[in-house]
Image 1 (cartoon, rainbow, N blue to C red):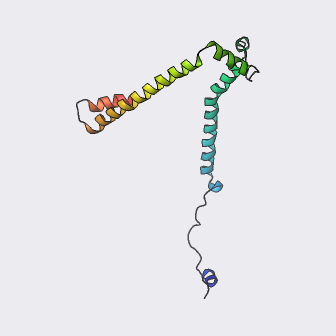
Image 2: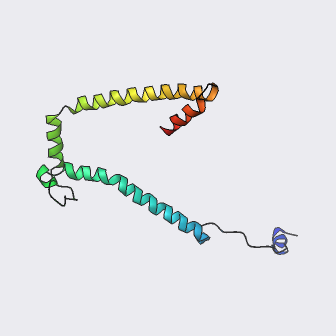
Image 3: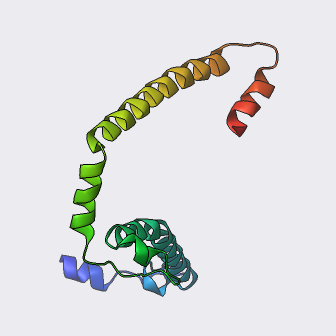
Length: 137
């Protein structure tokens, strides 16, 4: 007896056929499409301010004060950026931002670690109320 004979003489499976995965799922496919549609709309909403920042940076101020405002970028982006760099000390502003964000990050990690240890290991009066306030903020 060969392997082919074994396969040919095997009894037919009983019961319902196994469920297939993929596009034939019906409701599951619809939920996936809805999820992607929501993600695309949310992404466009979050990226719109960055796009408008480029539009505003590429036009003269007089054009930005009209109604309705322009929605397409102009041709002055590089000239406007060069003017901004010449008029302001961008390096100092970046350094200040780096210092503030670095100190804030280190302080947050330090204090959150200490607070997490206190809430996790120590028992004290008002612990649950303070924990609720911490989570709420």
